[in-house]
Image (cartoon, rainbow, N blue to C red; front, side, top):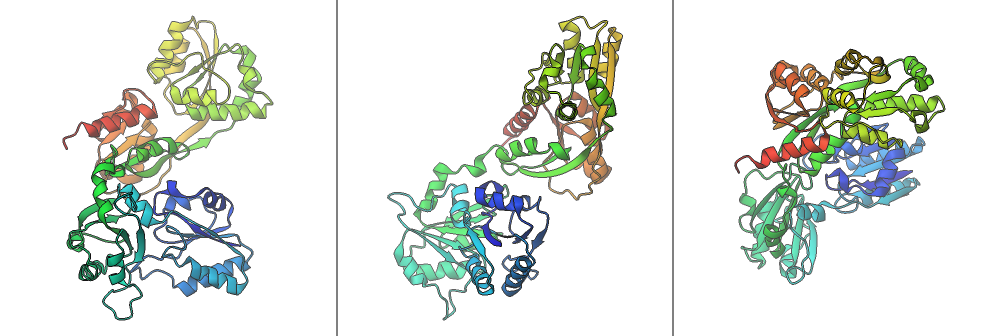
Length: 489
């Protein structure tokens, strides 16, 4: 079976539910060059066929058709992932014809087309009551001066409404001249939208007579011609988000990168993810033993979501659930760890005001007398000893059970043009320096989640521009936004 799937114009959030379902279960993805890599990152088998205007490395359409037929005949479920909508200047119908001729079953899954999405992200409606009651989509890949052109530009000039030109960067001057010669006012508003719906989106506003002279226009490009372009001044939104135009690197453990990256993208940032640390589980026998004698403990302390996750896995393997913690005082280092516990039905008794180890220790010591109590502390190997040492000094017996370790992901990467690097732990600083080298790590300033991480960054020679007032992802993102808002325009 072959699925001809529209990937949308670039923003992976515009993928359809049906497309997501198919990507999750297919055997192979055959994708175009302009498809966002995040859409096929988890694919078991992903193959590029290029398909970008002017790209000599692109496979021919005949070769793509043959590949789809071959993969289907091998018994594979194939997603042919095409930019935008497969049937809007996407040659999806040609692929469908080839599949039908070969007797291969197929399904067409529409996608959001760039001719609607890119203008919407630029604050330009393609129709608007009283201004534009029609919209015409036209390919600009043909030279309009050729006698055999299939597009009647004179007729388009007479229709009015909004004209949306796909793939028109090469022939934009000829297109504009032909429309003006056919009677369309040279002062008609026009917009060129490059990399539409992505954080790198660039919108140029001009007139029909001047749009082709705009500097640095390059594909992928959507051109909008019509009076509705003037509405951008009022309803532009995408490029007015607080972090738009900022390129930010997220360095987190590979299993934990999503929350921070998603929040930064929602604020408009161009986010590059570099898993600088990898979480590795350790032998769980010691944790099994500790859980087997939970009744001997009065406290259990969690200082990360990861510790909660590993603890709960072993708890379930021991045929126990949240009721096993009844009677224990449960401590969480901060909101993320608290939320991880809440997801398992446990509301922690202690959450400090300062989301660091010192805050946990202070809260425990002021809340109750810990002398003579036994405390279970599932933790990361190589972590700081502030909590166990402080509790032991107060007379408690502390069983530290190492359940995981954070180690460098050793992912070499070339990083250019960064505005900011984020660090959420001292280990991410170490992993980042190992990944990009000492000199590379100092090219961009950092945002850190708290004072301990700040100290680690500065010790590595990295300038710290932002420190989160509290050790949480929402507070960190808020601090980044406020930092850039305060900069001179």
